[in-house]
Length: 158
Image (cartoon, rainbow, N blue to C red; front, side):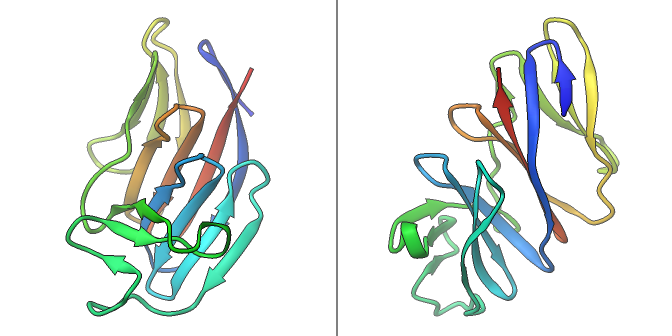
């Protein structure tokens, strides 16, 4: 658990995902949709469990992929629901939630969570591969750090 002045963040999961290209948070913030060169996966943001997997690789003519606007159709409990995804295709997750700020070092070798009120900064990850996305869900309750090789999901608790 990472303790900082603006509250407690609990790590839900950190999982290896080879070839991760994009991530998106479902509208209800219950799931993270992951796109990789091997298809789509869905993780539960409360338990970290893999909820669904589709091994259809993304291609320019994939029915579930709209690369031009970053929309990806969900799978299983989110079947056919468009989810805005960010990563290699562009876009970004919000990097601010109240006084909490996610920062990527200029060299890309550290991802930190900083409390703007106190100035306290905590290391979240020292990624060994390229960061695809780092930021908050719209409500600020879920924090995602995605690299080309893994996904780290944290939730605010307390």
